[in-house]
Length: 184
Image 1 (tube, rainbow, N blue to C red):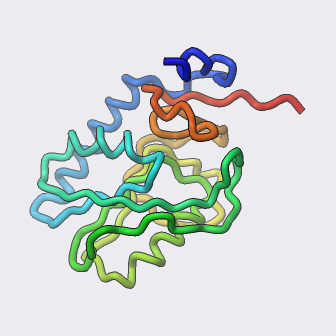
Image 2 (tube, rainbow, N blue to C red):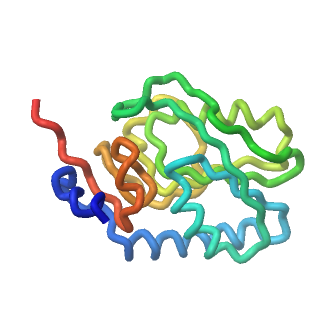
C-alpha cells in the first residue's frame, strides 16, 4: 500500500486508465484468437514488465496456448534510456521448434532488445515469430522491427505502472502514468 501512497511524488499524469487498458487488451485478445485459430500458439512473455499484460491478455485469448518466459535487459537500475547492450537473464524453458511464437512485450522504444531477441529465436526454428506490445514508442525506434499487434502508440515519455517499473517499483498500479521529469 505504501508504494501507491508515494506515487504522487513521481506521477505527472495518468496516460492510460485501467478501463482503457482492459478494453484494448480484450480487443487484442479477440484478434489474436482469430489469427491463431488451429495453431500451436506459445505466448513468450518478456519479463518483468510484460507479466501483467500477459496475464490479462491470455484471459482474452480463446485458442489453446502455452506460455513461457524470457528475461532480457538493456537498461540498468535507475537508468531511463537503453544502454544498447542486451543481456539474457533467463532463457526459455522449452524448445520452440515448429511452434507459433507470439512475443508479449510491455513496451518497445528503440527496438534494440527485440531485434536481439528475434535474432536469438529465429535459429530455433519456430513455425512463426510475431510481436505483440502493449505500448509502442515508434518515435524512439533506432532498429526497424515488425510489430504485429500494438495496444497503444505513445509519445516519447517515461511511463510506469501496469507492469512497467520506476526503479523496480510501482509495477502494481492498475493504470499507466507518466513520470515527472526531474528538475535540472
